[in-house]
Image 1 (cartoon, chains in turn red, purple):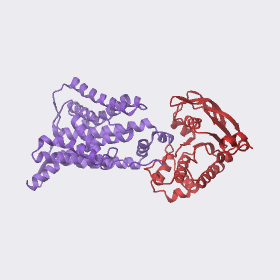
Image 2: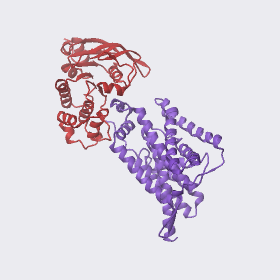
Image 3: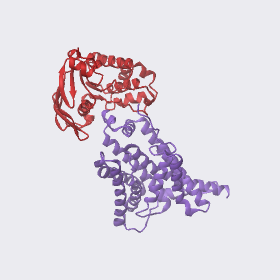
Length: 236
Length: 293
């Protein structure tokens, strides 16, 4: 569904992404893992249309979307839950949910009920300002907001960042549910490689702007080098 | 001072304050969304004065009014397109210098086109009619200005709180990137902000100049600065703040004039600025600084 070809991206004067190619099949969960500064965020931001690619192409359903503005890509069904959640702190939870559906003109009642079902905590707090939520709740809100545009592919930038392990488990459980129940394709980037690899059907490892390894989630979980570099487990 | 004189002065002050408030909103809205002090705003207000002179020369007042509002709105949006939009990713200082440039450009353009001599502001018969309420006598515009101001501010706040475009404006003023991830068109939202600000400046201009009776190329600079102070006083970025600031300024100035210190009426504004910056730099209703979580 999403195909990246030879993508190069500059970030702050340096080449953050140095020509990567990968594919995200429909209804799959794909993850990019790698250390800080490997170019994962730049990749997602380029796919979302926040940053222009210096070279290369992004195909969505075989259509080249490389030069489309961000809002057109949202219309096509691509959504990004940005790093650090970035909820609108001085809007209420409900307003944050509604703004996710900014481009839609149809009735939202059903969709709002659906995200409340996914995150009951948000319903309890729907009147509260988003800035007063805890980190985990904000992450739930960011995911709920992303879902409101009824995306076909949802990209998540470090959803586990700064969250307690139990909350991370919950978020990852929900991501899997979204993928299974709604059939939404997921492209996930994580430093928490362990969690990401467990739910991913396919994974790519990025190092300094290049993809250095790829395989199914379980393959990479077993891989000695990956275990040593990203999972903090010593080689035997 | 008799009660009648006191009330009469209050009325004058509130009326002046209303016009200030309408202009101050333009500063505060643009700051909210672009983090830019739009120094050209006072000159847009001055240009609206000239537009009115020419519109009234060719049309009856009920056609001239909408024409002036429309042209001023286009001027404000046009300035943003030409002078600020190309600098969207430039440092904030560059945009501010561009705004100062536009301000001088408009002042000199007006001097070149209309000469530096004050031109008589046309009288709109309805606004000039004298009303007597109890012992108070004032022209209709004096009664009308505060009412209209409060009405327009109410509509504006409703628009911002309860409509799609208002939601977009709030989102853009918070976070460009995330707003565009929601599918919001940033440039269009910014244009609308300038349109609203300029429209209110045009309304303010009509109310203000109807009382002043002349327009000259620099008649926007001092009211512009004062309204900027009003916006800072209320807490720049906050619309209710700008309105309160406008009224405080109008009342304060008029009180000084009434007390016989008219020499100091302009100084009042800037003393107020210094005091508020010393005591409460974020202004009365200044933006809450939300910590990153």
